[in-house]
Image (cartoon, rainbow, N blue to C red; front, side, top):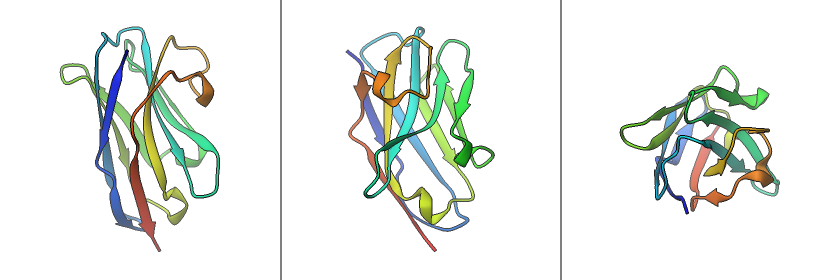
Length: 124
């Protein structure tokens, strides 16, 4: 089992920044992919970004590329999502998720472990 706890959500103005954090406990993460997945109001869950824990290789949804940066701190077992130049359409509940393996990191349904989510609201 992997337990995930997110923090860092809140309210931001368009053009502003927020940083989300996710602390992972319970397993050694070497073989895991950690991801941020969001659910906008009235929409299905959507892949945002992922990182392969062992290699730190990163993946992004095209809509956030160049604005969001995913990173991880191995010593703290924490994954971050730095969100810059926020837009109102980034408003969503952001979930941290984890899965064993590295194939198809954009496949939302492949993630086994989920945090409780953190709300991000971007005002125009």
